[in-house]
Length: 128
Image (spheres, one colour):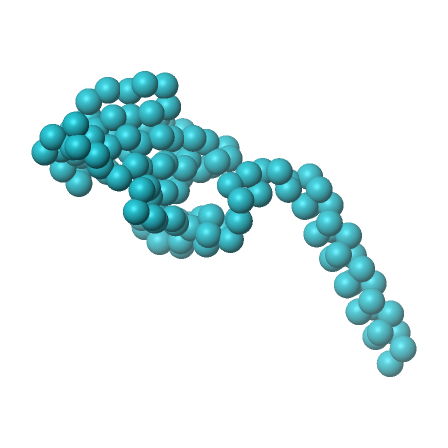
């Protein structure tokens, strides 16, 4: 019975050290957007379902989405989604995309979250 306690203690210590090393090495990337839990849940949803993007944040002023980076231009995916919602692409300024719909304007800012994912911030539409 004593050997079982030693094995369990060794496993717990090993897992603690491994988890600590992962946090030290990847901590800045994991926590770059603040609380990583909503993003981790969104990543699981992207991998487990057939969707192209997942909304993980929504307020009165903006919405945030996460999509997979398939190697193609991720901005095209944003354009397709906004077009499906009735928005017309106006112009691109850096990583920002401007869309128009019924005399209203929406700005979408994109940024790389990791090698595999892209985050989009969509501002709520404002009158022009």
